[in-house]
Image (tube, rainbow over all chains, first blue to last red; front, side, top):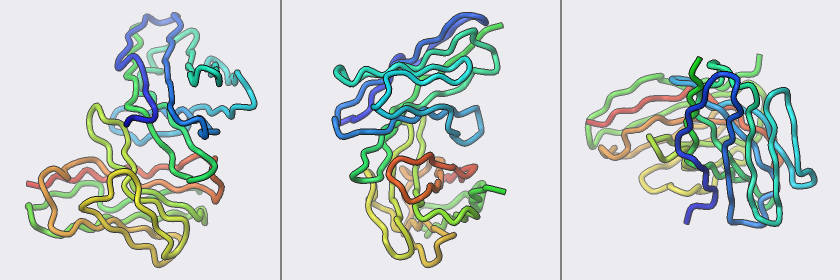
Length: 112
Length: 113
């Protein structure tokens, strides 16, 4: 059973548009939700993260919106740039088991 | 300099051979991980290590074993490699807390022929 689901699988936007990447989860004990991005031929790196005490986390052009009741979150990338083209992974961790679970990723392409 | 180092970067093995992937970190992190990444499947956790000789299975441990004899080193061993173990393997580390960021190595691309 897939614990963390991401949609869409791939997304293409034009430079300057807002990209919206979605994530949902099953386990209500998850209490930490990091997003990692991965550029081609590189390793994943932390982009931004949120804990359920907040429903929004902002870092520059990147914002996480979190809905605990619906077990959903989304990553909004405003004013998208070609350099944002990467695969984005939503992950979740429960304080009880230390084992981060990753979604399958969303591949984002930003056209100039 | 915070770094997770993986060796080797690329590896080609024949089916049935043994494989050793090595990982080191210089951040004194207690927790270390091995993931594999396949196209369209994201990152799948193979094993997690909470400290020296304190290892736990992840979601896909079958066909793999690990060794952690020093806090800074974590090895992944494939005994008698199979073709379906062809993948990119990532090692990661984090501080000893359930909700901490992972630092990833650059990955090892393993091909089993």
